[in-house]
Image (cartoon, rainbow, N blue to C red):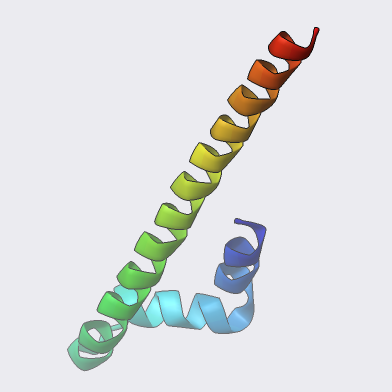
Length: 69
């Protein structure tokens, strides 16, 4: 998540976001919008997978701690 934030907030990332959503040229918006939306979807899926993995690890450690004590 930190890497995605850094990529989005650097000058190049801000230019891409501007070209995808705020540009006055339709061609620029039509080219960049699907790319940006796909990237956002991938970042969202990675975040959900990370959350599920952390949840699984916490439950697994709790189960191990309960059986060992």
